[in-house]
Image 1 (cartoon, helix red, strand yellow):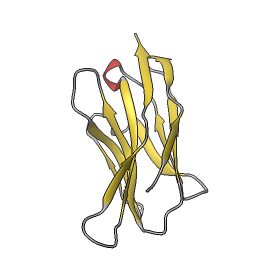
Image 2 (tube, rainbow, N blue to C red):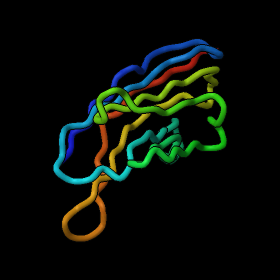
Image 3 (cartoon, one colour):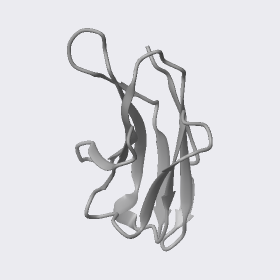
Image 4 (cartoon, helix red, strand yellow):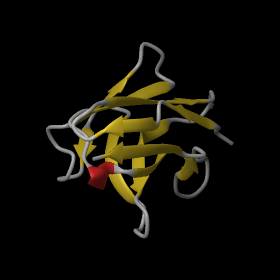
Length: 120
């Protein structure tokens, strides 16, 4: 079992910036990737950004050029730097970690989520 703890959400004006952080617990198994999903009001959860164990990054089209995902000095922590925030970026951001398993497919673990509110 892997625990994830997020922080950094809050209220920001449109055009402003926030940085989210996510720290996972230690695991003996390989962490395939970590990243963030956004659950906007009334919408399905969607992948915003991810970083793989070999540092391949992914961004959704809607955040490319505005958001940056990175690792901290401790490999258990990732950050999401969000710039030029829009109302469409508003919602609950969930950190996830996909972790190899001995048997079967990898397991995905989730944080509790952190709220980002963007005011116009």
